[in-house]
Amino acid sequence: REITPAVTKGRAASWISRFGIGILLDRIHAKYIASGIFLVSAVGTLMIAVSGNSAGIYLAAILLGLGLGSEADLITFTVSRYYPAEALSRAMGAVWIFWAWGNGIGVFLASLSYDLTGDYSLAFLLFGGLALLSTVLILQLGPYTYPVRHGADNAKNASRGLRQREAPSLH
Figure 1 (cartoon, helix red, strand yellow):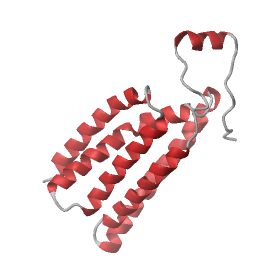
Figure 2: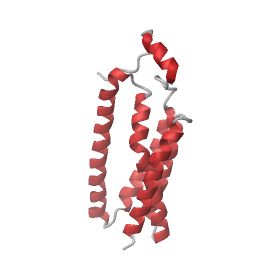
Figure 3: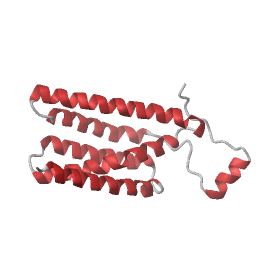
Figure 4: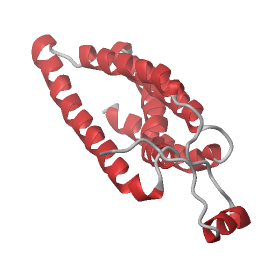
């Protein structure tokens, strides 16, 4: 009975995040945005683990919606700043494979948590802790290897055959 309004609030937050992430990425380095998104997601996940009332669940759903709404755009943008266009499809393929594995492992761990303890709290505490770890780890990224180029600069450099420095290989 309480889950439908919570999902609705989370979905609305997801849409807001989806629109807002692009605006933020144009102005702020992705590692800072990602760190903030991971932190918001961690708080939402931990709230699910410990909240026993509707207001807490609603707030948790909104926080998770903000994180989930921005993940695809944030991942794609960030990877595109550290790998050249020639390697971008391989890099994105690797990232999305690990993302899918993480989702599958997460479902398994949540089920295991329920089987062992009778609820999902243990799994949500683990997921929240991993999100907090991600909040710190993403900040270790250096400057963009392939910064955004706009308009005439991009066309001028492309016509001269200029390339930026090489990114790490995926071979």
